[in-house]
Length: 346
Image (tube, rainbow, N blue to C red):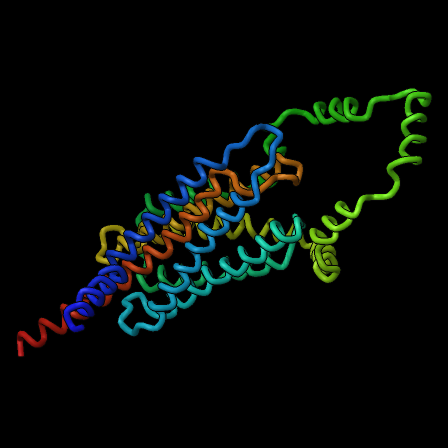
């Protein structure tokens, strides 16, 4: 019994070690990339299958749930060099993003709703707030001291990020798109003038034959229909669409600036590797969020989630998790090495 239990314990300890968890995160990201590459492209005019949409949520939410758990472990550990409050804020940020993703998936997959603003946006807003607070605490604890070139780099990131975000939100802002003439042509094509003699016959035929819907269509509409309280909340939140979208643009740029500041602050330091992962997670979130807004603005509000570049949402969760794992590993090893030195001196 002892010989069999010992290999099992060593196997579990190796799997849940820092190296094993990092490898698991890399494998998760590679599997997600393969999944998006293989199944995100469909024939023109066809919708993405429901199993693919479920798979995208599975990879994304799984990554953010894992990031929440490892950030919670960092918050519980008193050995964290960056401080427990940093990882409490980052952990709450990824947790609220996870909850927002769950609600967004229910709205999209279960009830087939795509409101301008939903309850999920409230959790996404909280996620931005807590992620920003955690990164601010990390930068402040480092006592950021930048030279002129580094400040210019931060200013350049702010200008480029703001300009790109504003263009994504309003494509006509810089006049990069053509005039709205194609829309008028499309309306003329879709609503042609038909003589009354041609339209009258089908109306009589429809009124005599297909006025009552079949039980199958009624049952499908009932199953897809959202509860009344959901529709009521969505309608009340709709006037907040402009403010929420503006907050997302400002939040993305603000987090992008903080991510650049983290790279500059921790560059070449002892804990630079873990905070580079956190910064790369913010860059990945910015790419995925900008792509989602860009595709949605050019799809007339009918964009179907699951595009190829949305795999960066999965990378965001994985990078947050890897950064937290590396920070925990470095913090615990540094404390153990200090204890070893003290005992050796004694």
